[in-house]
Image (cartoon, rainbow over all chains, first blue to last red; front, top):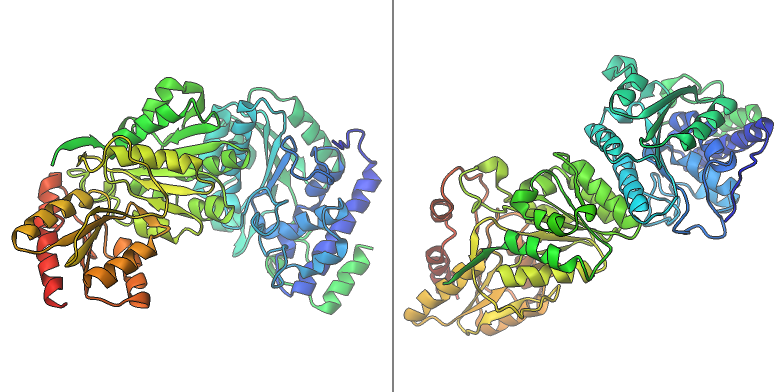
Length: 277
Length: 312
């Protein structure tokens, strides 16, 4: 199994994140619909997962029973995952522009039935962490050492099921499970703060019994350090609260929630690509 | 008719007895294991039993995740809770993902009795049948339940099993085998066919005996597999007996009655009528009083049969 343990340089990771952001913008522009804001906010974390030696995975053996699992519970951000999978060699980069097109395995939200690399079918918010808890319990029962990573949104965490799962993982001592909150501060209708402010986020997860790490979700060193710390924690699951900027990486999208679910025009796409070059 | 055990009790027994032969089996419950009887599995295999607490949505998602790693989870709660509270999770995390996970809803119908509407699962078959790829099974007695749990465990794909709270009339013997997708003719007859499921199977047999006294020769078919549906048995019944009564402890939407109607209309239209709860909530009461008030007795089935015969 290929394991990227010695990790590439910070610069290499930043370049990879730029490439993935380019895929996000181009694919959503080609599809003429999608969610650029939440995809871009997650790009640096997803980059570190796939290229920073965090996830144990093998493009030549994608269904290895002992692979680490990554569930994108905030399924609308799936262009960032498709972009990472293309960079990792799972799918051709050219296929990314089939996003949301009839007959494409790159569905608008992750679909395991259409694309078996997806660990879970998500898009109805709040569901991924429960599936991850099930994987983590089953992994422990099997004596397997794979780890399960689940990325949620801060808006998504308004779903009650998230807290059912948050309650159950520490009870089952799932130290093979990591939740990542992509706290980009916005949801469809506006800011989390004005719609349903559930701050302080990290304190809530800690109170539920999770080992909690709060980081800047765009700082590669901090992301790498958080995942490294997560691997050392025993007896409880880990929650990484990643403070991010929705739309990070493209100046006219960053922090502007009008870009929650809007595709860039050809001109806007070209502008974004120039910035991400 | 001789009363056997409740199908929920047979469910618990079947889980416990299958545990040794199927090591991948795990059992989950949402704080109702003493009532769903899944506790019987816990007694034998405590390390393979997970009480997820009063968190049905999470339980369904956890079952899906376990299945994706190769476990064969059986998750149970009351029919009303596992289906209604877990529905989006059953749709997304189980059906859409195509996971090999099994679910059992006990205390179905109004025969749960005094607890009333909140606990009476009367929409579960409609909702379960909506789930793409699910098999939906309603065993009629303890023997059929044991066979159905075995069939579900060996079936590749998601399954919903409906169980009841009261003791059920014995229909079968202990050697009963269960074939998903097959209906079972338990009484031959040529004048009319009564198609029944679950608790209504015993009532249908009783109705057929009452009808025989008036010279009506009724066929009785047990539809313990609601999905997939035995269309051949339906078409044959329509052709050979020319009239159909469908009896189920469920609302009139989306259950066995509508599924059978679709097959009949497309293949061999004949007069049909339906014995079910209708489009309403029930109430608190003893199981027998509720079944009588809401029209789910042998007498009701016999009366409906006479009515449909008049339209033949």
